[in-house]
Image (cartoon, rainbow, N blue to C red; front, side):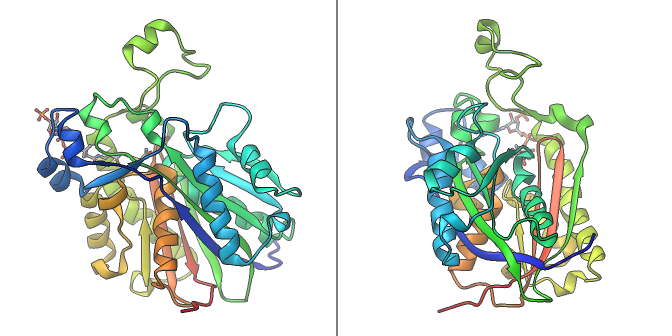
Length: 335
Ligand code: ACO
């Protein structure tokens, strides 16, 4: 590829809904305990969107914050990519709804489906457009209202997930900064380990399927756990190799937040001390495509990153999919 410019993050934003569901609330809903959830997952509470709050509302708030952070008008956005598995509707795309709500008059818009790897997949896509000079400013959002697709009577899943949205505006950055390398992957043979079985063209919704709860997330937790522990370190090592860097050069790892034990395994494999890993799972649970950009934006706004720092993003999820990238933080930290 003929690279015309480097692509990097110009601004970030995030939003989580006000509704909180604590582990103690869940004790009153299913046969579980705060101690089990905390020790097996690291989660203490998660956020829940209001019944009348669509995912586009979360995405809009995160997107506005990212544009403000980048000091950029919505009219300057050329493309909007929303990574989500809980879009407002099957059609139109959530990205199109967001384009209208933002007033991003000149932007193309589409949704991207890669579950919890979605933000990194969408970031890789954004960078291709910028690096080839096709577009200048691409807004990437990971947004989810998982509370609307989980069975609140199923303790295997309802304790794990939360709602939120994170956004990043990508654009041209100085030489040597921005995104250096990606690794994207998939293994469709593992698709059944994490799925919403009904509501698509394979199994259109029927009364029978509704009764069976096939509109909700079904998960083989152990299979996903084993896959995640292996893939998280592996994909970061691949991305590092592609830009000729080593584990020791990582200043910050921003991983998908699915289970604290998965993060501990990645820390061990990549030999990273905890202070280099951005963790917010205890407050938000697993927000799928929103986990990485919310963690990234919170850390950026908490002044954790300095210009030139090496940051690794890494996600895994339904598909099965995985994705990582290595970037040099391109934004001046203004205190
Ligand atoms: N409270 C109490 N007990 C529970 C709960 C709960 N909430 N959930 C499960 N249990 C029980 C199980 O029923 C099982 O009981 P049994 O032994 O009598 O059958 C026991 O706890 C142990 O279950 P395990 O599955 O062995 O528990 P494990 O230590 O594997 O933890 C967990 C389960 C947390 C789901 C873990 O496997 C995990 O995190 N997996 C990865 C999940 C993940 O990352 N998913 C998202 C991917 S991202 C995406 O694309 C959306």
